[in-house]
Image (cartoon, rainbow, N blue to C red; front, top):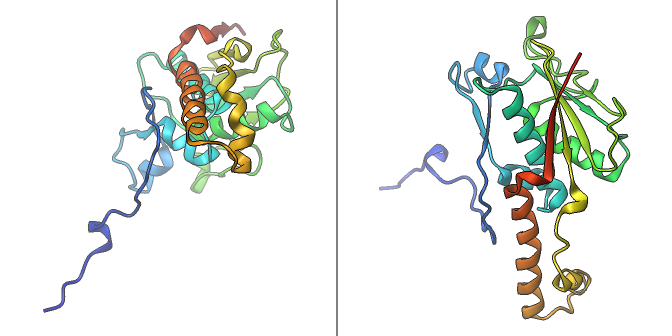
Amino acid sequence: MSETTNPTDTKRTEEHWAVEYDVEPIRIRDPVAEALAVLEPGEPFVVTYGDLVKVAGHSCPTASGAYRITQIGLDALYPDDCPTRSEIEVLAAGPRDDATYGVMSRLISYVTGAAQEDGFGGLAGGHGDRQHLLTFDAFESGSADPAFRLRRTDTVETVEVTYHVSSVPNGGPAIGSLQRIIDGTASEEDRELFAEAWHSRVQNVLSDDSLFTVTTVEH
């Protein structure tokens, strides 16, 4: 007798992570997902740092910084409620073509849904519209470090989060092995020492609140 397998009963992906990070996930509601019965009403998506790593294709202080900016900003804006996509505006202090702001904004947009004119326009009547919620060169932060503002469109409450990337530990001499790893000339010991130093930097960003400053923006 032949045996058939329902695709929904199988594990659709098999991942082989070489590292694990210790950081809380971000929970965020999505009105479109609720309307289309992807989520039960009131239930959030759970977004992990690993999800952002998949989007970026790598893990680094820039990606982890974007994750924490989003997490810290949303926690400040929604101390008692779950944040909701389409009700979160993201303002970047720098330009879109800046290497840091460009990457970070893409990852912050992944979590919040905030997009420019090419974003999702919502269901009938604009339900869940995410267009025009991401703006670059939106304000002057007064800091050389990356800064983003997150604003609730329902209350216009706004917070500014600055990421003190210049204070992130440099990782020491082991980081210098990266080029040899890319060239394929690094030893196994080089690779192990690099991985330990590199991911320690990332975990530091995910764990050290002193690397971030959050302030309320008065209107």
